[in-house]
Length: 142
Image 1: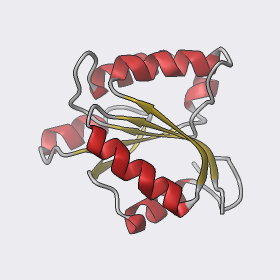
Image 2: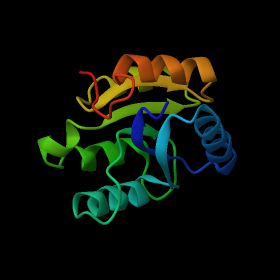
Image 3: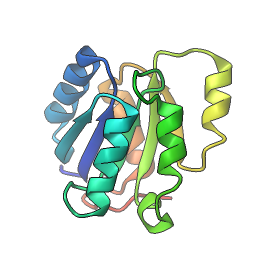
Image 4: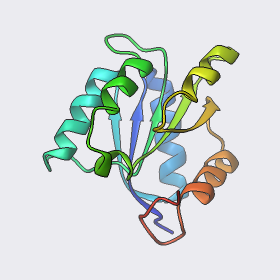
């Protein structure tokens, strides 16, 4: 059932990475899982993907509150990437924040597709994938 090529997890919480990697592997819905621990590592990963050194992610699950560079700062840097790259990537904010202001702020970013609370369930992930990807294809549905 491989639907997507690469998922990028951006979170400083090791337990979150473990849980989501296990869920993604169990669902067998992607070829590759890339893991970064803050926004700076994630933007470095993205620059590497643009240069052809890393796999360009089809979807990014992005935490907001992280050290070094938070999710908002990552989004500011992501917005500077070429439109042809940005348009290929779905970004889902994945956070523990229940503050309405954070959800409202996420809507200010054109690149953000959804705002979800941690941790993803199998049903939530299936729902996200069905909304944004056609089965057996790697092209986002916009």
